[in-house]
Length: 492
Image 1: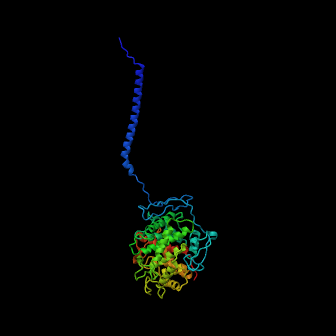
Image 2: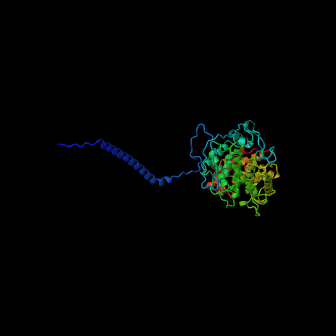
Image 3: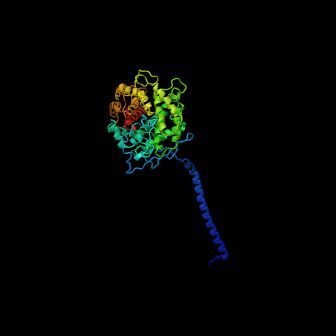
């Protein structure tokens, strides 16, 4: 006999409700468990997440050789400001594309004088701007038009006694500079600002600017480096202001930034803070002129020495470049007048220009510097220039592999004699051209001058086989070879 228990309908209903509640509770508990596990994992991983940082660094051009595209874009628009001096870090990212395009000319404009030349037909200060014409917009300096066309460069090289190897040597040198540029945009070690300024002047001499296909990024990186230094130091262009030689670097870098501003500003593009730093740097030069009319080490304006012609020559070049920008400097004229009086007082009766004083004895090291100072300010017919040029032809020698290998002196001699033109230039050109061309290394740099005899020169950093010495002499030799198209010779 079996017994069967039968639940009432009310009991069955209560049982169903209990089952549903149990199921819901299980689901809720499962969800809460999953959430709890997630929270625990997040708390465990949070310290690792917090360690993740973003490192923003200065981005320059990849120095590895790449095959250029068939239609490369015009690059290097500066879209970021140099860092402020109070910034914790100084990140600057420049890696953009723009539509900047420098005007090019396909015909030789054979005009006397030059932007920094002898003043024939160019006004009292020797500054000449053409009216544009078929070859480009108004405001492009005559000499800069000609250096921006390879055809014109080759024509000028041939016309004034060069040879095609001159152009090849310059390009090789610029490529060497590009390959040896440091990641922050500079060159050099102890004198980074000055060495960077010299490299930029060599780039500009060949019409290489931030717009250039091959050298644009390198050029832009160098300009930005100088602007970073100037921004940090309120216009003082040197990394070590305790080094009494820093006025050299300041003048060279001011010269370079002024040329960069002329190329950029007059063609519709510019770099942030460029004008501000340039104005500060130029005013610093004007305000720190010694009562003698010169400039001295550490910008000492109270001492009795009053400077020397080597320092003064760079400041005269820098002032001329700043003048050409079109920026107004109210004290410029008086400053230059005093500076040229200082230069004149350095010349001896035999035509030689001395570092200090005006002694007859000594070497012709700075005679080209003295001559060039007057030529740059439209005074190429002065007796100081005539006498100095004759002295250079009579006394200056260049034997790259012997003791007569003062490249610093010939940096000035080559510019001064090119501007003299005529037979004086032809005679000098025959002496200097092959000596420079035949001593370039295969990599584009120049070998150590002087050979076993050393070189007769004052403070010959260019004769040292240090990275800075090699860079320095490579810049000097490049600038010498660029005289064929940087300047238009006068007729005397």
